[in-house]
Length: 263
Image (cartoon, rainbow, N blue to C red):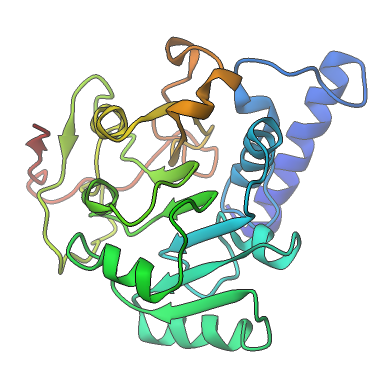
């Protein structure tokens, strides 16, 4: 779905929610789907993050986002560009990282770095990038090693984590792509981790799932000490692939691809 078409979809969704409730602002509800709204985000992440932060407070107003590409679309772009947050964008692709640095060259609140984030380097990169011990939002989108990197992070305990999951996989199983620091995504359905694996690591690290978006792309997790502002975990929707709102996902990987069961 083209960017403008996606934005129009989420604007229409917001209007539909308002009309359904017959008021200008819908009452808070357990399911965060009604808050999905996309301006700079790929799907409805902008609106969900705004509602999560409304409930828990903005804290230091600090983000970390890796897999940011050129900074034109992403989960933290609105925070950086509109709401004046400080933070760090990291991008592995050289051309995209250069474009990202050019975009923010005059913004002293936003730092950019050309780097491939791995389980071995994540703490070092956070420290070198001036990240505090408690950033408010961490967004991870590297199309493969996402869960391994989050599990390895010890430098910081973000208040909110947004991480891509593989909605093709059974959410009741703890499946994850074997770790490979040099992995490149082939554009198929062989990538990342199941929602069950993400919830398993979340429990280890002291986080709880609060939302998965309509598109079945990202999981939103809040630190346990802040999670009483949200519905019971059993009420959180577990989405199948619905990329671009068309009910589909990525093409099958030749040979199926292999996963391991998270221990």
